[in-house]
Length: 444
Image (cartoon, rainbow, N blue to C red; front, side, top):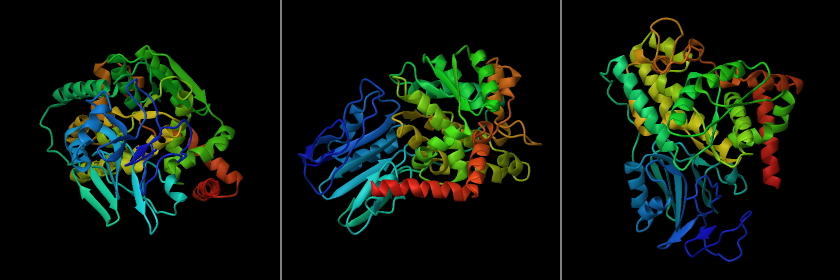
């Protein structure tokens, strides 16, 4: 914990024994690199916490150098000039300055009432303060002070012009960008975990992460009837990588559901259903010494993974492009924050190579026919499948249809059965469980 006047590092929860002030900042260290050191950093009259990574800077030291003399100006420079997934907060006397990257890979919220102003990476933190949290938009700087609130847009993600590359040229470029994204996100890593379903996204990600030198732990989870398990075995054999398979039952889900809900922080059935397999992968990863976990999240919005895109595309090409772009803009709110919180609450750092800014801009500019079929619902993510075939993957991998994680893992049906057993609808069951879990936090 730190104030502008002092800092104290402690092995457990916060205990204000030696620091004073009207504003304080805290940081929970998840050490995933030898260069990661305790924070907050106190210098030049302010205390700073930075969570996440700048992909071209192997050490967080570069961040604090940028913020040293003028924190607000330094945060603007980070947003404009550096690629990465991160959020930062700076405490000065009488104000808090916070910001996050332009895509929104790391969650960040703020709020204030008559007594308190607060900033945090989750919404649970605000409960005990009686403060309503508001999301810091990606690419924004928010300043909370005695004078009120300032929210400044530094940059926004834009939809680029449509590429003129033919499919083969675009596939070459995609391979180069996936290699670069894998290399950048592999900073100081050796043997991280990859959430692995055997689908096109996680298989390509495994290929490129292996290509840049990582010794991956592929981990697939699901019910005993999950089709992901067989698909993951086939894909892992093609990659010549070891695979860990973990199955979970309805009883297991019931036991862990409160933890999942408290990480997701919403009772949305879709979000909980998608978060559950990642939670069990992260639980398995948390017993390993390496604290980094990879996921293929972000690919569906960028490369046309959802059936709704194909349906719109066959009626209105322009609207299909607009729909995918809107979903990329909202991906932080719908998907990225959820997955980061699930992993962070288990002491892991989540890395998402598909949302590398260069890869994101490239994918947004691809012609829709490189992503979506002219007729029918399959195949989608055409350019990814084309790349997989070029790399020599069999049809069982390159042609496997997209299926939502909550269904392919079997989680959706488990949640339905738990809700039915409790005599409730799925939304009502999840809402009740979350309310009970949050009540325990307020009381404890």
